Length: 125
Image (cartoon, rainbow, N blue to C red; front, side, top):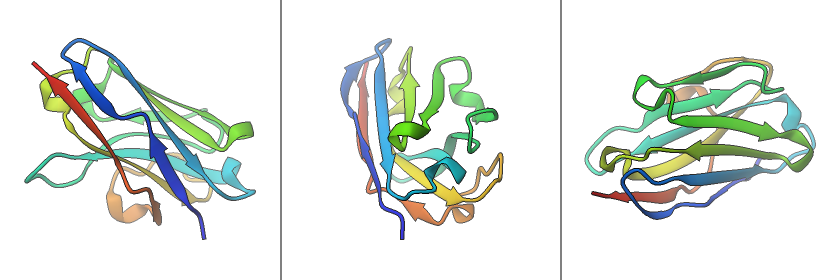
């Protein structure tokens, strides 16, 4: 069983920045694919970004490309999502997810086994 805990959400003005953190338990964190998803009220959960086991491969959804950066520190069992130039449409609950294994890319929620509880990000205009 892997536990996933997100932190770092909050309220920020449009154009501002936030950094989300996600800690996943387990001695084999370095073998996990890590992803970030988000879900706005009344909408389906959508892919934001993911990073392969060693951070060598990263992928982003089109709406966040050039503004968000995903990174990981395997020594700390932590993955980060740096969010810059935030827009009101980025407002959502952000979820961290992990899938053990060597996959480099998954962008569908059903491809991830373990999920955190989510952290709220609100961007005011």
